[in-house]
Image 1 (cartoon, rainbow, N blue to C red):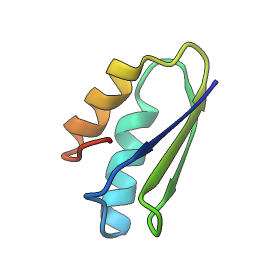
Image 2 (image 1 turned 90 degrees about the horizontal axis):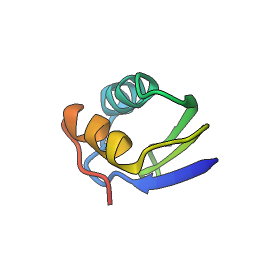
Image 3 (image 1 turned 180 degrees about the horizontal axis):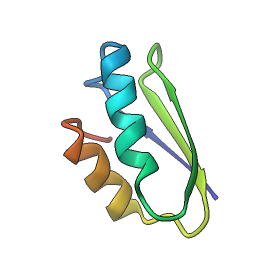
Image 4 (image 1 turned 90 degrees about the vertical axis):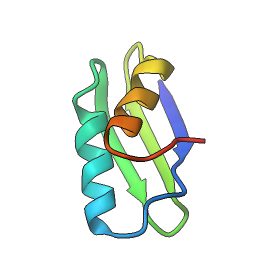
Length: 65
């Protein structure tokens, strides 16, 4: 399964690491790719929960759209 979110608040490498770290802790996540230029976060894994992924992004201090 693959899910992509736009996270417009990311502006630097610190942002990228914060979002990657938060999402990586969600059960079922196998990989996280962040493209700072396009503000896209692509998550791959099994049985991914949209609610859990959005909550992890919010916990890192960002909003997923």
